[in-house]
Length: 299
Image 1 (cartoon, rainbow, N blue to C red):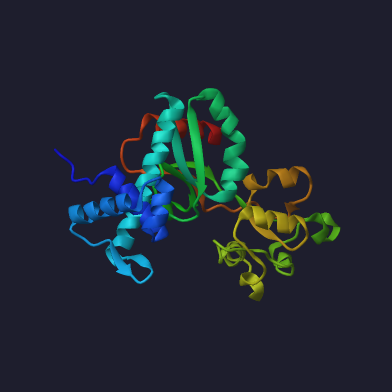
Image 2 (spheres, rainbow, N blue to C red):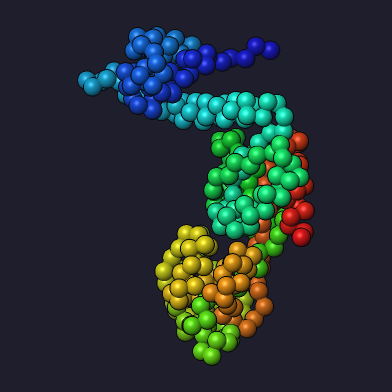
């Protein structure tokens, strides 16, 4: 069946003109004349039956339809360019994976293990971007995501399938200098120390105190807020307070003695790390990566 698609050249001209809101600057970027860009966009508008630009005193501006279409076309061209570069780089062998990952897990757990992936699958390349919340794979162009959440959260991610990798054991940690005698405290005594907050988990401390059977202190929601676990770990190591972080993400600080458990209770874990992919058969390169990840999580 013949597809209803405009020419790639017309889309490239439109995307550049939409980005600059200027035919002149689009022509300069694409090494074309302004009239050539204008003709391509006129042909595209005629093909669509929709006006993408309107004339203004200072040049052109996108219509509402043009603004929406520009976002879609930009993502499509970006993905096409990325896939083209991958084919050129690998000459048809192996492949690449475009992975969305929660930041600290990517830097502290995944990336240090990627040399082992290269040993087993030298023809696989992993490109990583950070995302902390679910998204629609059709809109973002990722092949897979490494996500931290509860089983319910993962189950509510539409149009996906998930593979459990690791449990997230969360513990309060701090600099040894914050602990009297350098020994861990009971949960109620911990409440007297400054608490470092995680932006993406604003209720984490309150939930932790409740799980420990301790009435949450008034300042359980108060304190410096950090977006990443790595930021919280550095702040805690410098004595700014107690951080509630997954053990697996602070191994370097623990080995150097910069962070120690602040409480005498065992770790608490309700969340896990998952490999999430679109709900369809996995391409061979993604299946190989998923199998390798499972092996890494088991060791």
